[in-house]
Amino acid sequence: MKALKVAGIRAELDASDDRMQKKVRNAQMQKIPYMLIAGEEDQKAGAVSFRYRNGEQKNGIPLADAIAEISEAVRARTQV
Image (cartoon, rainbow, N blue to C red; front, side):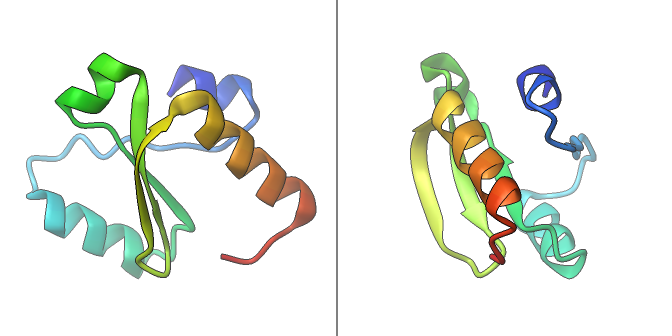
């Protein structure tokens, strides 16, 4: 979260006890463009699973690459 905020990216953490499917569904209903999911293995590797609003998903993306992709999309005002 800190790295995202340092890069100027608004971010929120869903620390609720809901199941992962419900968390993803809630984010989709809120039309959140990017979801970064960091499971135990991702955290050990310094990576995230990157999920777009349209359902496309990339797994094992280094956090720095995810931040760069989001920053570029914001800069270019890319719709996702």
